[in-house]
Image 1 (cartoon, rainbow, N blue to C red):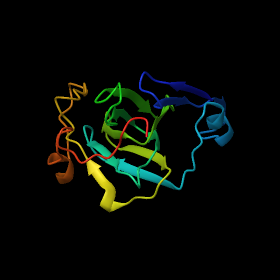
Image 2 (image 1 turned 90 degrees about the vertical axis):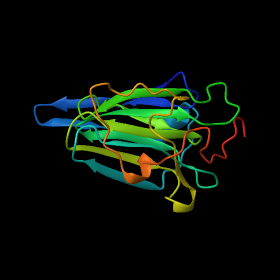
Image 3 (image 1 turned 180 degrees about the vertical axis):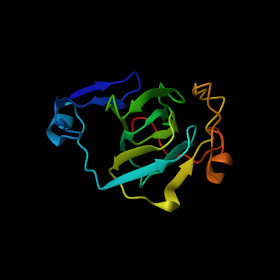
Image 4 (image 1 turned 60 degrees about the horizontal axis):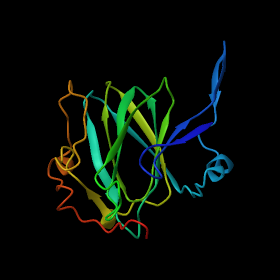
Amino acid sequence: MKITETDLSRVFIIEPTVYGDDRGWFMETYSDSKFKEVGLDLNFLQDNHSFSATKGTLRGLHYQMNPKAQTKLVRCTKGAIYDFAVDIRIGSPTYARWFGIELTEENKKQLLVPKGFAHGFITLTSDSEVQYKVDELYAPECDRGIIWNDSEIGIEWPADLTPILSSKDEVAPSLEKAENNFNYGK
């Protein structure tokens, strides 16, 4: 398993080692000891699984505020997505910067999105499935979002896709107006 930090502090790309033969393949998708080796001491409490029927389905940008903030370990187990993390920690040197990566069933890469970051993805294929671990349970009272096309963030979404949004995501506020209690260094 290869664990690589991105240019956004605490956002990691996880690349499992895949062992295959003519019968199929095996991989370890999470290892507490290997995560601890790079300073990630996480206690995952819940696994989530989403299905998107249509190419261009956009989910995000989502986060949970403190005290129920979540770290997410995201992977695409069917199809393909473009996955994003956005630093929303007030006072961070990388505030409003984003990192994006293609996650597919073929490349088996994962993205670790820590607390203090908004998360979103757009499906690159129809019938895409995304699975992710979280280290805090869902808390609707702390659930928040930021509009997907916020100009301050400037995410470069795949140009050939027209986003399909939920009613919740269509009316999400801008980063400037979003409720946020994350402070860098605290």
